Image (tube, rainbow, N blue to C red; front, side):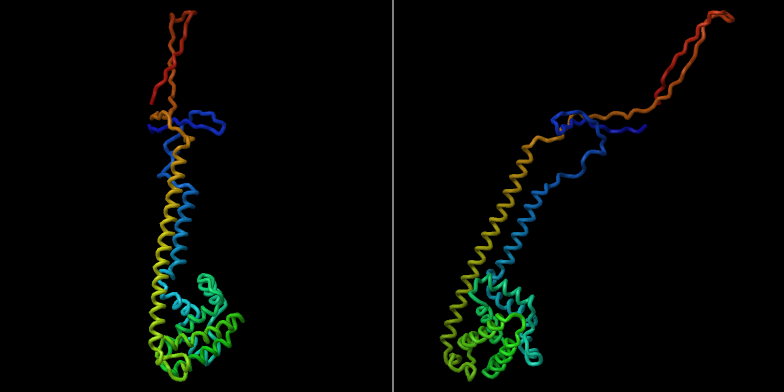
Length: 288
């Protein structure tokens, strides 16, 4: 005989009326308590904000690499776009998608007045890496100028490209020892003291900006974590204070009802052959 476990549960309906119901063991909820949709949404929002904060402030955390990143993303293949491709196919290897990405990421983020400053940093990085003598710098400058003239993405970028290249030339000459015809009138080897002083000033400014960026990123991260944790604790307390709609009442183990076949026995009393014979039937139930 198979035993079935039943639980008596007090169920409160929408109309406020309560009634007892019996449910089987298989109808009980399984597993631990699940988080509500609101709690899951808060957790997802907090994680997303932390990721966004890191992505937004990563350049301030490491400011030395932000313009190198812009340079790599602009040219796709670092430095190569200004070399052979500018001679064989006179245009920079840029696309509208890449240009829009860098424009939105670095121009609006750094709050620049125009694209010129962005191109300044781009060509300062290019000329500093690729030329060490006056003749080399003159060649690379012409290749970059050819690429700017054949810039076919946006007209405003073509102007900013040429202006940025023009502005980068004196800055590179003041920070380096190139000299010669390329840096004639812009300092160069004869103005090494001024170049070193400018480099030290730029380095100190970069370090201070980096420390400020780290502090801001840490503070924002702590505030976001505090908000998410506080919201989760608040909603958990609020949920605990609510009356449960399901109250567990008396529970026990009962035996499922089983059919019991009945057997009948007939008894006859009286004299043999008599007229008044009495017959009685007795029914008994036998449990199996």
